[in-house]
Length: 182
Image (cartoon, rainbow, N blue to C red):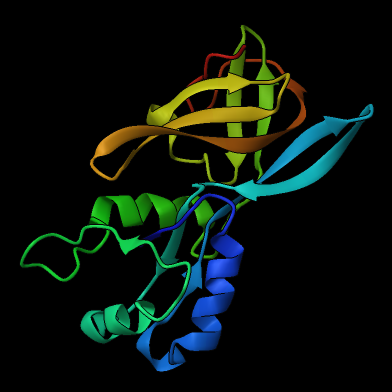
């Protein structure tokens, strides 16, 4: 993971692709989130940075990659670099939630939700599926869900997009508890 100035993620990725041997890394990306925003009275699809200021790289050649990244002008620092250690990987738990919400890709898609009687929400599909314990709040007006995750050894809230697919009745089914809505 590389920390860069917010707003320079795409430029940094392009510089890495041009200046660093592609054999030194697998994936190079900054994760996005798909959300819907109401602009001039219409709902529109928007793709925003999920974690601004970070570019993620996968590699098995960390030392060589680090030396090559030093030649990239917008390179700030590899996170986890400490005295005596060249690089500390993203902890497995943090990598797992990132993989889960992006589906192994680079973007967290919309989660489909259904409003049920009694102020409940049922998550039908998407990145929020099986994350019920981490959801802090669902804002139906803004069509977002606040999810608490561990990132860089601290609790961080990320906002993910939701899409409502209708209203239903009855209690949530199975392991899909009702979520508080606002």
